[in-house]
Length: 337
Image 1: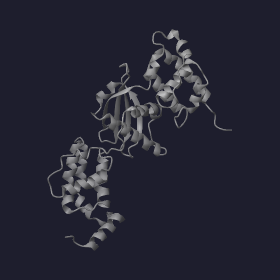
Image 2 (image 1 turned 30 degrees about the vertical axis):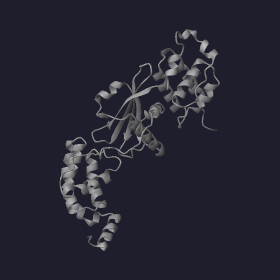
Image 3 (image 1 turned 60 degrees about the horizontal axis):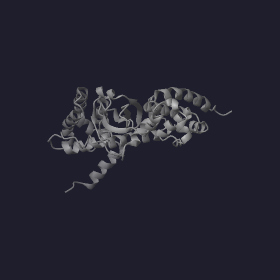
Image 4 (image 1 turned 90 degrees about the vertical axis):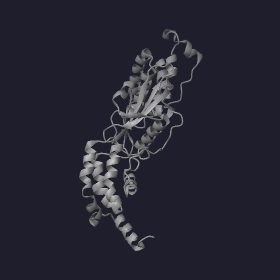
């Protein structure tokens, strides 16, 4: 016997909830409801079973469902006809005009920044309001930095959510692009560890990001290019270039554990540095730490793990095979003019 199809049960519950929403007349509530229904309708979140069921039902509740799903690009829009627009005088002046606001929220601002002290997660935030100026809200996505940059949580929040966050104003097109990039990575990672709240908000948050004109995709973080504190020391440029290679496309993630990984593991194993670069590295890391928030616990780890760096860099037992081969090649080439 195959798996039970819960479409009928889900549709009956959707109809019940739709009756309440028709009284509330809130575009945002209706879009949030459609997003949750999409998540409940199947692992793909397409809401196809609900769409098929609702298209056979000519009730006001079915129309609301199809309109809300269409606002999130989860179904084709429900066609209007004269009979439908004249049979609801009880709705009062304007009929169900509020339903026409769904899918039309416009972006007003954007913010981006670290979600925690050490940048293990970033927050990408877009603010929206409907054409009538009502129901301002935020689309918030937490983007993992420690495991590849995928979306790990998403919510719709009130504007006051920004009050306690350490985020900076940003270009909405850039933030929208980062949200879309993060969800692409989430979809590409089988079994990606995401928060329980993400599926219910996925459809509406993606719809909001896609509504921003010309989202900028695959744009590198500007944390490296905005760094202006490189110390004036021999070897500092070489040391910083090596640090940039290590942090890669997640430069804002800089925690005590990441410092330890860089200084005691990655550098001795992978990097070939001049004596001047090894000597300059602690001061380069101090400046980099100040650039990322000057966290005392990170600076303390830089101090502690830098003490034995020259010895670690000279310990051949720590070298990777690739480093050994590269060193052998350099020795064979001899001194360069």
